[in-house]
Image 1 (cartoon, rainbow, N blue to C red):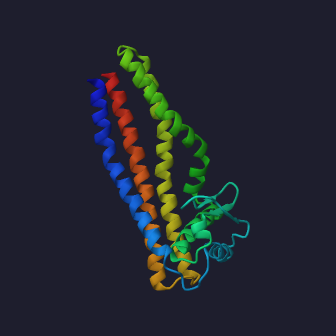
Image 2: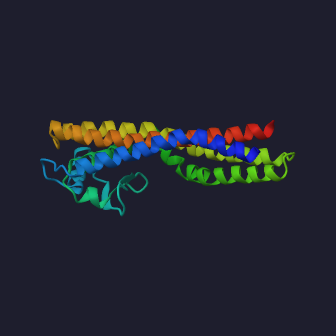
Image 3: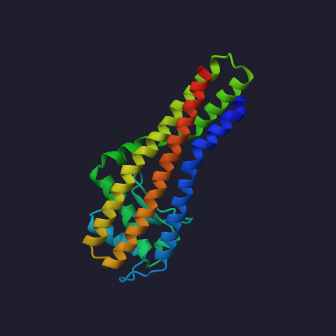
Length: 238
């Protein structure tokens, strides 16, 4: 009965953020697909746009490299590298301009010492560890509890998992201001450099807004998962 109740509780807690994640992914895929087919008036590819924006922001120490995969674009603050996927790097589209400007926004954050980016970068190893080990400890504690409900070990094991996973949740929370700030910088860059017309700006902004939803969805999933872990712990302590 305990196991059945836990399964239903997980379903009720995790279903809403899961539905929102599916919606967010569909939204970003739709926006990227739509504006990838719209050529920008400058006829410049993502790589060329990156070079323009990096120069405009005095980021001459940042290299541009390719990365495999779809929408795998990102800025690496440790190596000072902006990595672009083929669909962005080699395409003169409105979508490419928006994505490139967003990643250059991260590079500008790095140069300016943006506090949230620095903090997020510093906890990456701990967050990765917490994301992996947190769930493992909770599952281990859950299994111990199923076989020995009077054991004091099970709640403690779950508590360790909660603490570890909380670091991953913190990373997800910190990601929101980092990503939204990078998108705001991207919009300002596109306007100040004159890379886009008013209509193209609206398209690039739509891509940025859709992408931001995925970070909100990821945060909601992480918080919901942590809440579920806490409920498991509280149930064991009764």
